[in-house]
Length: 302
Image (spheres, rainbow, N blue to C red):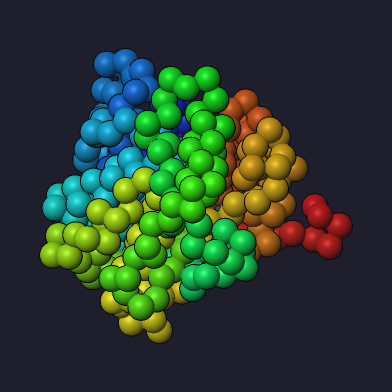
C-alpha cells in the first residue's frame, strides 16, 4: 500500500528534513512551506534531495485561523492526488513527529484498509464553541491581520463589533448536518477524490468558508461525513495532542515529561514539537519508539 504525506510547514527546516526522512519507504511526501517564511536555496535543495519528497510548494501566505490554512491544505491534497498513486493521504504539520516505526505505521493501515481517520463532532456540540455556531456566523479576518500590533486581539475586536451590531451570517445549509473536527486526518484515496470532486462541482460551501475561524476544522469533516459511509469513518486521528497550556503554548509544546503519554494509546504522530523544549523528547522517540522492538510502560511510569 502506498501513502502520500502532506506536510504544512512554516519554520525549522532542519526539523522538517528530519520528519521527511522518516518516510523513506512506500511514501510520497508533499510539502507546503508558508510563503512569508524565509527559506534559503540550500535548505530547499536539501528537502528536495530526499527521493520520497515529490514536491515543495510555497503557494500561500498562511495565517493562523485564516482561510489560507484551508486553501494550502486543499492545494497539497490536490497536488498529491494528481502526482501520486497513493492509497492513503495523511495531513500533518511540520511540528508533528512519528511515534512508531515506519513498518508499524504501514502495517497499521494495511490492517485497517478502507477506514477514514477524522476526529469529528456533530455540531453544535458542548465541546465546540460553547455549543454554538459562532465561528461560522461572524467574519474572522485573520488573513488581513498581518502588520497589526496585536493581530489576534484586532480580530477579536472585529468580531465584537459585529456582535454589537447583531450582524450575523446565516449558517451554511448545503448539508443538513455540520461537523467540526481536528485539522489533521488520514483518509483513503476514495475520500480524497470525493472531497476534491465535491469542492469542484459544488463550490458554494467552500466559498462560504471564507473568513470563518479555522475553516479547515469544519469543511473537510462536513463534506466527508455527509458523503462517505459513516461506518468507515473512525472519529479519532491517532495524533497525540496535549490540550493544556504547558511550555508556553496551548496545545502544549511537548517535552520529556510527555514521553510516557505516547505509550498509552496507539498514537502514530505527536504534536506540537517545538525547539528547544522538544529536543531531548525527539532523541528519546528516535531511540525508544522508532526502533523495531517491543517497549512497554510499567505501573511506576518506567
